[in-house]
Length: 271
Image: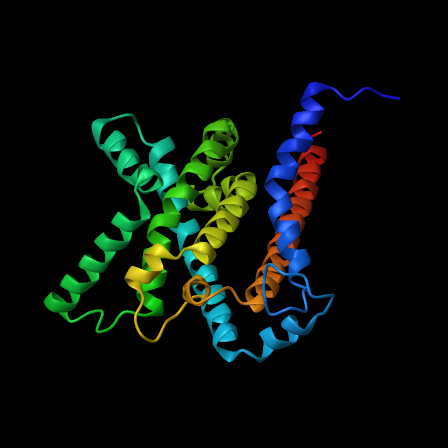
């Protein structure tokens, strides 16, 4: 019998520590009892009840819509910021901009949310926009703090690129814009995908900033879940969390699969 090494044991203990709560949650999503912590037999009725709850379904759609738009905008802004952080010559302006871009990574969310709330209120007083807070203000808020994460991910990839490939393309007559879309973007595509997925997850999970930036007409899923938890955890929340875990796992697996296949194709083409 093969003896387990210390690193293998620690690996399995770490995985159990990370994923045991999720498996317990998935198990109790099939609980027939109204009490979340008391097992009353196997049943899928809470999944049926979940799809009958129009408030939760509306919140899910709102969160998915905001997360998709926020992640897309964050990739655009974060990629532009990453280029400034890596390609411009070293100067005090570049260092200052880099520090300002990465500051939201260490900034408490409550401070970011309060700052954005004050900004929206003062803009409404000065120029009349936004007239009321809702999906648009949440989208702007999420795009702002998610762009910092994308900038860090993309900049690390840009530092590893061989710039001689881009220089060769421009020596052959390609414009900088054409070089960017035909040469640079394919090479940093895994980082862009990772940044988009990270932003999507952060936006979907955010509660604090959305609470400051939202209005009466826009309620995200974390806000609905948090408000329902304060009145007592419903088994429907377990069913909803299980579906979210399955969806996120599927997206992460597909992203990993396509990124790995693209990397293999790129290596084969270079050989």
